[in-house]
Amino acid sequence: MDYLIVGAGLFGAVFAHSARERGKSCLVIDKRPHIAGNIYTQAVNGVNVHKYGAHIFHTGDKAVWNYINRFAEFNNFVNSPIAVYRGELFNLPFNMNTFNKLWGVKTPAAAKAIIERQRAESSVTEPRNLEEQALSLTGRDIYEKLIKGYTEKQWGKPCAELPTFIIKRLPFRWTFDNNYFNDPYQGIPIGGYTSIVEKMLDGCEVRLNTDYFDFIKKNSEIADKIVFTGAIDEFFGYEFGELEYRSLRFESEMLDIDNYQGVAVVNYTDRETPWTRIIEHKHFEFGKQPLTVITREYPVEWSRGLEPYYPVNDDRNGILYQKYKTLADKRDDVIFGGRLGQYAYYDMDKIIVSALKAAAEEKL
Image 1 (cartoon, rainbow, N blue to C red):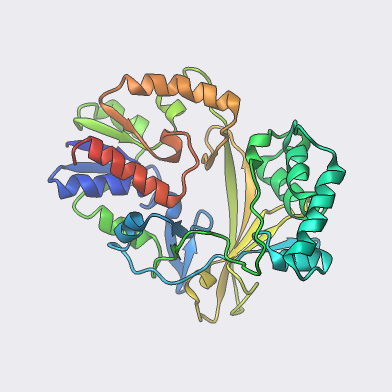
Image 2 (cartoon, rainbow, N blue to C red; image 1 turned 120 degrees about the horizontal axis):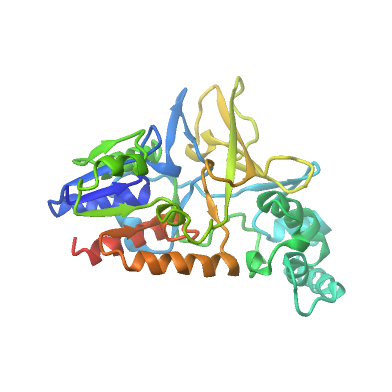
C-alpha cells in the first residue's frame, strides 16, 4: 500500500479520499467496530444518534463548506442550547435573553451596567486561576449559575484550582440571538455523519476492530507511509510520560414519547447534577418520530484504556507535547494528524483543513 491510515475518523477519511483521487492505494484500520470515529452516527428507530456526543458542523470557511457538501446535503439546523441551573432555564450563549432571565433587564445598556458593576465588585485585576478569570470577565451571577458547576464537572477540579487559559475570553451578545455559533455556515448532514465518511473511504480497504500496535508488529512493511491519528504519546510508548486528556461516558436511552426536552442540547450547569448535558438527537434533523433517544454525557478522568476525547492544553502538557513533536518531526515515514496526533482541540472544519494540508504536502 502507499498509505496505512490509522483511524477511520474525519482526518483519516479526508486524507484517504485525497490519496484515492490521485490513484494512491490506502489501507484504513480502526480499533473500533465502525468507521467515522467520534462523528459516528447510528440509526436507532429512525433517529440518527450521535454516538460520541453532539457534533454540529459550523465554519466560516466557504471552501470547507463547499468541500463537505460534496459528500452530503446539510439541513439548516442552528445550535441554540439551553442551560439549566437548579431548575432555572437560561439561553446560551450569554445574550439579552440570558440577561433578561437573570435580572429582568430589557436593554443592552442595563445589562452592561450590571455586568460592569459585578466585575468591579470582584476586585480581580490579575487573575491567578479560572475562578478569578471568570469573575473578572462576567461578575458573580453569570459565573455562579452558568460557568462554575459545568466547568468543575468538565475538568474534574474546583475552578479555583484550574488554570486561567481555559477561559481566555467569554463572548457577550447584546442582542436577543440564541445562535451559539457566529459562523455563517452551519448545519447537520441529512442522514448523519457516517455516510459522509463512507463516501470518503470509497475505494479504500478498511479493516475494523484492528489495533495498530498489534497489527504493525506483523505487518511492518504494509505501506510506504503511515498516517497516524491516535495519541502521539502512545505512538512513542509514552517515552516522556503521559499527556493529559479528559474522557467521557455516555448513557443513552430510548423513550416512548415524541419530545423529551424540546431542544437538541441542554447543559446542566449546577454542580449537583452529575452529567454535563443531555442530547436529544432527533432535534438535530427536525425529527417527527413517535419515539425519542436521549444521551446523558458524563466527564471522566482519563487513564490508559479509556478513550481520550479532549487534550488538556496547559503549559505543562504543551512542553511535553513539544518533546513528542520533536520525535515526530524526525519521522519522514509517519504523518501525525487529528486531535490526538497533533494534541490540539480541533473543530470539524479545522480537521478538514488540517487533513487537506497534509495531503497537499504529500502532493496529493
